[in-house]
Image (cartoon, rainbow, N blue to C red; front, side, top):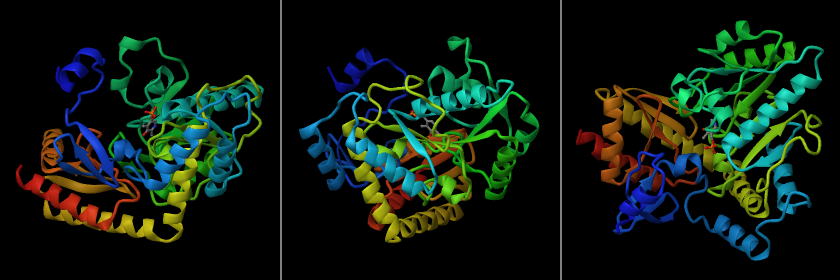
Length: 394
Ligand SMILES: *Cc1c(COP(=O)(O)O)cnc(C)c1O
């Protein structure tokens, strides 16, 4: 049986899969089973933040695995405590951390913290969470419901939990708040929705307003976090002080991990929330190595240089191919080219793969770029060379 046949017979068909079989990666280059190489402009989906087979990360994982992979959360876990400290210090916020295993789970934790806050802090219980249209917050029943895209709320999975409402834009949040609203949940750059950043002034104004009304601001940084936008958190870039921040994708460099950070450190008590795997030795040792690598890259100025270089290349392409693209969108190393149509988007992604460069889709018509933060200039040059070859064949 071919790999494709085995996959189709035994793995549930939840993904529209491509059957290129990657067997190895080095930095931002992937190799398939035929020995062909590909420049990786996707890094999973913003997951391989330090590239493939990063020696420092690989070493940290191997050394940890030789000692302890996992114990329960009923005992203290040294790398978990150290990772929490590191994350809080890098964020600059006075927060505490809860560890989960994925972005959706991190958002579940955030919603639980907000709901308990709303139940315990006010005379009349507050429980409603406002989210934005075109947002994406996960695939569990609750986070699907929090996701502001009607197509996700199919009747297949109903009934969904109550208490979620959607608004088209940040300006519409103000009027949507009522005396039962406990929180606003948003991405600062909507990733899955089309790599669409919100304006800094708009977000700052909203953040100030929410503080005044004692409504919590939850920033879903599952995709924007861990230096993706050039700062440790997009919240740092936007210079706001959220009540709750969620992280996942890039934090473990490929080892599953999620995290909720909050300034409301005393809301959850023993027994309120938990996770079997969350924050275990393996994932938090990986997280520590990732933050060592990325904070050094940030401090040296190299990360900033990479993102300027990447942006320039992308702008050049947008200018040269106005027949295909409307504009360039995004922030930091979370970028997109808005294609003229969904059909053009689909063809570009297919052709790119043929030419040996991996890019992603986002929204209805955006070609998305989420390279590893350690990508080299040579890899960027080669990737865009292949991408332009792909464009010329359209
Ligand atoms: C990917 C993503 C999620 C879901 O993360 P999972 O690890 O797939 O559960 C949630 N929010 C945002 C903004 C994301 O990009």
